[in-house]
Amino acid sequence: MQFALDPEIIDFAGSIDSLLAKSDMPAVIRSWADGDTAPGTAVWGRVAETGAAALLVDEASGGAGATAVEAVAALEILGRHAVP
Image (cartoon, rainbow, N blue to C red):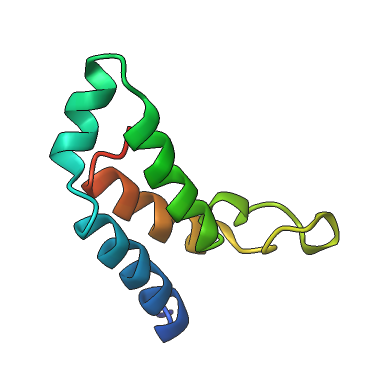
């Protein structure tokens, strides 16, 4: 039994990682902690554009219909960057 991620999942997670690496997350987190949620909301908007926000929504309802493995790959990257 192999538990490696397939290349599509790795590429998808990499695209989210790249997006967040360019987002100055420390400043976003500080703003969020100070009550200014606009920068964090903007980051979530960009994350949503990747399709990550609708991974577990079935395709019939307009989502990606992804598996839990794909969702975990995306969530791991969001956690690594401490997205508020």
